[in-house]
Length: 79
Image (cartoon, one colour):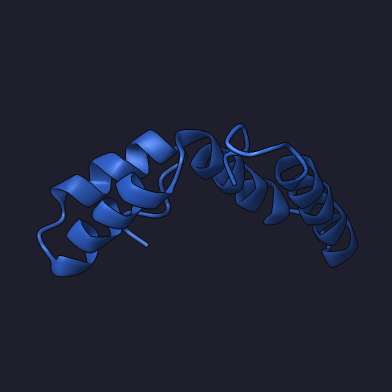
């Protein structure tokens, strides 16, 4: 929670870089290899907004995001 409670992707990365354990270094490595900045930012924002929503609106938001980002042709899609 020390790292992932940060309000932005940039701050999460900064906090992970300051950690000394294997978990932090492996997480950073995976993030840089397989995650686009856009997908990380959209996912974090959705999780932050979902924290104050009930299940119905959360599922609706998740469905809309999945449709929006997976219907674009590759390689334009970040997801």
